[in-house]
Amino acid sequence: MKTKIYLLFIALFIGFIVYGAIKQKTYDPKAKRVACQNSVTTFEKIFTKDLDFTKEFILSSNYKIESKIEYSKNMKSNLEGVFSSKDSDKILIEVLNSFKNSDKKYDNKLMISYYIYENDKEDKGKKNKDALLYAGYLVFEFKFEGEILYKIQIDYMKTDLSDIKTRINCVIESFLSI
Image (cartoon, rainbow, N blue to C red):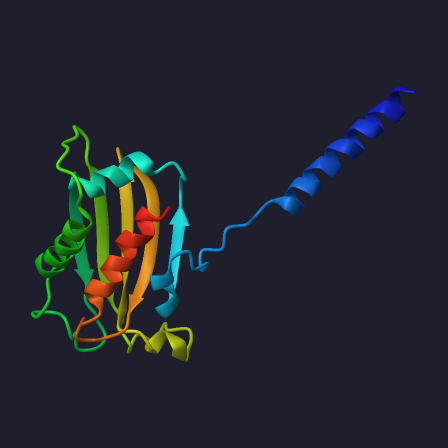
C-alpha cells in the first residue's frame, strides 16, 4: 500500500513538472513588443517586470551615462575620428530630454550603460551574409544599484549614423514600455 502511495505521489509530481513545462511561456528575445522594433533586428532581455520606479528616473533625468564605441578593426572605420562617445552621449541626452516630464530629484540614479559596435565587414568570423547588411549595433543596459534590469541590442543600418537617433529613441521607448 505504501509503495502505491509513493508511486502515485511520484507520478503526480512528474505530471506537475511536465504540465508546468508545457504551459510555461517562453520569452523570445526577438519578439517585437514596440512598433519601432519592427524596422530593424532587435534582441532584448527583461530581467524584472517591476520597473515602474526606475522609469521615473528617466522621466525626471535622474540617470548616469556610461558609454564607449568599438570601432571596426579589420576594415577602415567609418566612425573613428568622426564620431565619439561624447557625440553619442549628446544624442542620448537629447532623446532622454524629449521624454522628461518631471524635475523631481532622487538619491539614487539609474545607470544607462551602452556601447556602439561598428560592424567589421572584413571580420573572417562572420557567420552569414546577413551579418554584412547592417552598419553596426547598439547594446544598452539599464542598471539600478549594480543590478541589470533590462538589456537591449538594436542594429543601425546607415554607415553615416543618420539613423542612430531613431534607434536610441527606440531603446528608450522600449524600456519605458515594459
